[in-house]
Image 1 (cartoon, rainbow, N blue to C red):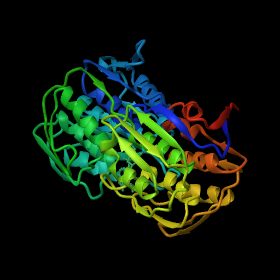
Image 2 (image 1 turned 180 degrees about the vertical axis):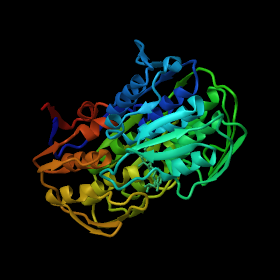
Image 3 (image 1 turned 90 degrees about the horizontal axis):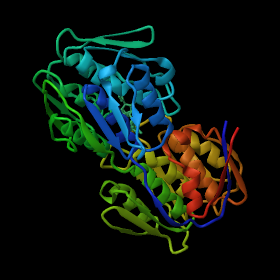
Length: 420
Ligand code: UD1
């Protein structure tokens, strides 16, 4: 397994470009199954999760074609197999996103039930009950969700018990081809849900209310092809800004969207960062000052994102003062804490809150990445620590961060990959 070796203590300085959003690209790739026409997707990030989704389409007999500009063209008219096998679902839970499109377009789907994962049990019951409310017959047997519908899915009034991002996306995609109107209440308002809705609208869907907690979809009989460019990745953006703040640096991130990062930018300003924004860029300058500890609580968008929680824990670990971080979206999302404490951080876990007392400095150590965002936080800790940090199991990071060591090197970091 590849490892990253980081020689800490360098202030990050410079400019980088942000890739397309993983969490938009995955549902948009799944949405291509809703039409037999060609769909061209631009600005796809080069990530392991995207490769997995392309592989999943390949397993179904759909062969995505990558052109010289790295745009992906998907023609799902060649589909032969309506199932998502466990081998792929176990490496990427977002494979569940093919359930709604397959059912709506082909009236049948078999998707392996995602198991537990490093950040909690993460059930998919809300996806299943919503699709049942739309007339699907669903049984869970032999580790698979086996779904079918006799004629066409029917529009339904759905109330989501919890705000679920992929759940909202699955139901929204299915509803596009259903008979009649679907209303999703307590829908996720995440920008990635909006990006998917905009792509579906470009394919001919009738959707309104995306970006609010009530999404209304009037089913149409067919969707058509389109060309769509995926929005920038707000979590990648935030991760580099936090890394720069932790190292007291000064960076500019380009090809991004400040308007969808408000909660994160506010916390960075509270930490002492001087932030400036343009339409598609954000700059951060710490004026070489130690960050101040911040307190925060994760919740669905527009509140502070759970996918940035671990990175802020790393920032607090070397900040002045004490900050508390409460995780309300996932259970068990503090695996990074124990590794950071091995580097000299002073973090206590109390239920779903961590209390982080800023330490004078961290010391490099061998650490183990446990999930995608936890891996990013350990890299940030390594960038500020004195001496060498070796981050093991970095396949997690390759799932969600494009060329992370190259981008950090561009900012001056001493980081390199040791292939296994
Ligand atoms: C998506 C993101 C992930 C992010 C998360 C929360 C993608 C591919 N992944 O994950 O990066 O961390 O949103 O912003 O977009 N839940 C249920 N039953 C369900 C579905 C969800 O109880 O059927 C619970 C989950 O256990 C969790 C909460 O709802 O506690 C939110 O999860 P959800 O929004 O569904 O996360 P994902 O869509 O899997």
